[in-house]
Image (cartoon, rainbow, N blue to C red):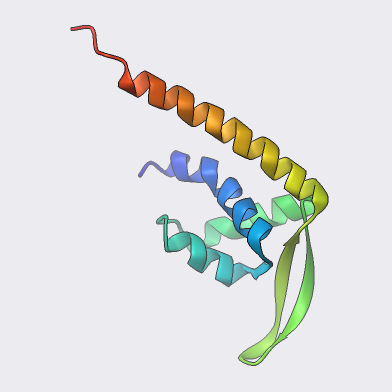
Length: 106
């Protein structure tokens, strides 16, 4: 799949997952790569950006498998932003699908 397609929806994927539950970075990467082939390093810039924008917060949680892990939690502002992003994505994909279904003039 085109890398630009993936880049465009990666933020949406991260927000959708964080809306369901809190995750630490590697856990998010694993969930996304189960569905979409992405490079592992592409998620961390998204997490830094949404953290800086106030769409999520972080906290540390002890781990039985090593050092404490940084978990990401979606804020109310992040939930509002997700709703806007979901609506924009739905409108965009409907438009693209409509164009793809049009008959070709040959």
